[in-house]
Length: 198
Length: 198
DNA sequence: CTCGTAAGTAAATAAACATTTACTTATATT
DNA sequence: AATATAAGTAAATGTTTATTTACTTACGAG
Image 1 (cartoon, chains in turn red, orange, green, cyan):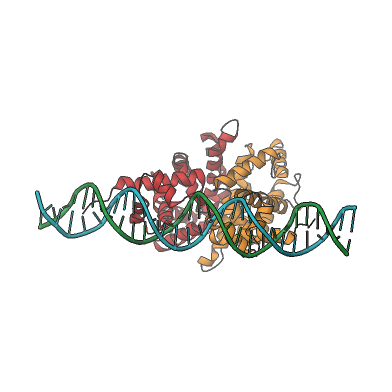
Image 2 (spheres, rainbow over the protein chains, first blue to last red):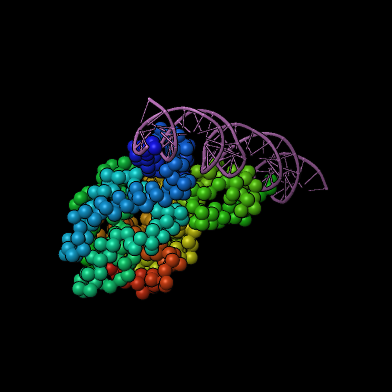
């Protein structure tokens, strides 16, 4: 039996993310992707059932899975609260700024009904994405360090600003100079922490 | 000369937003839209140059313009800081929860390169969207009420959480009960304010 | 009242689309 | 070395796409 060529699989995923980031999800076609990845259209269908399957796997495995791994490096649920949040912000910024293509698909996950649904189902079925972070918040709630909120609310308060800031980071071509610096980012992280402490 | 039928124009816009919210921007086609709006494809091309023109006008006029108007009602730049931010949060929540279709396209504005670019250009050319809010922040910076940051950073810290919270509000079908209540929202708003005060 | 004109329609066009068919290739096992 | 088998390809399928063509309709100005 001829073995799968993993380079081809990776090429398909990498080029797909590139097309989505540059032309938009609404302009990704299977034929365009095949041509750009130097592969026959049929090859994509060996690895993925259809276009929706490709998009969902791209989103959950290639993007969300990799992001989860990156954000959790050197993080532990029993870190001191401010230190833990700062580490998560640092990791998020490091990862996203070096993976703009993944960042764009991550944003599409908040708009596209297909990806939105896929995320919810994956989150329900496989327990939880970002479980160590949930544990971290749980510990700090029971120790009366932070205000008591559902996880979804904590997530919004602690992490949604950094996504907007990363967006600004990438938009700086349209401005005279970069406004999102490490220093600003740290100050923002501290503001967010201050807001949520008891 | 036969006058434009404004009902048809509004039907096109309303149905377009509906399709985008339910099936995704990537599944909106001109023919599908024409059929659903009970209109000939040609009629859409009388009002819009092409598909991109339709999407950009839908985004800037129908969605962003209406949102700006809604968020600024009963808001004034010289309100006391906490009071002003609370009013902006209230208005945002009121408007978005009653206009889910607009909310989805607003989210696409953060992913789709086409809409992203359109927003930036509109923001540069017509001065500024949300100018009264910029003024409000300016006043409160010079009065040493809040930390000094660029506007983009203030926007991320003050308003990105509420978009995530509105998303959670709409996701409640997938959960036993609604977690985003007026009470939680107010507490979140207060957390965000606390973080940014000097 | 009628007529010029832009709004509107139904049907057509060519290109692009997702997916498949029919075939070839590479290799792990025998 | 031969072969069974899944990976891979090029070209074709029928459908859907954005946009246009050729025609009809409604109405305000004369």
